[in-house]
Length: 227
Image 1 (cartoon, helix red, strand yellow):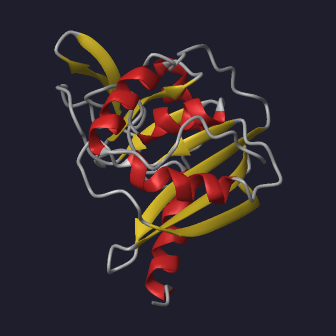
Image 2 (cartoon, helix red, strand yellow):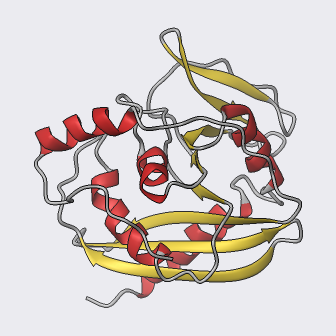
């Protein structure tokens, strides 16, 4: 699939912060009706040991059934410094390169990272969702910002994640007695439908299966990466 670039990646720290604030206004939460047969893509990134290369992997599964449809990956030189809150500017160029290798069109992207649960409401899932103009969901393993009450231990239990009085995500238990995920809207999906989609795409592990397989893929690629 071909992806239209919305902006340059050769920008300063100050420009990136301003761009995040502008792009955050383009996020459109809207109902996402899960198709009877859904193509769900998981997306994750890792960095080489020297930190000079970012590796992105995307894995597409058909749900239900969890049949592997295709996978792709890409490695690129890191050109943006490590700055908390601006990680999408380090990772998205490689993500785009990997996604452009897909021959299928996923119905939804499950991204290992934040959606709008971000200080400027533009984590990597939201940023990527605007670029792709496709439903995207942030499925982070840890909290970036916000306060919440611990959800019950049963699978499917959730609690709201707030930044002051603003609802920015959900803390979702995808397995009984296992640490929850921090789920937030990326683009073109509501928080309620994000929760439903993540649970539908989860099999036997904490992470939804497409994201789990993408994580496995980048971990192997990182281990075998030649310098």
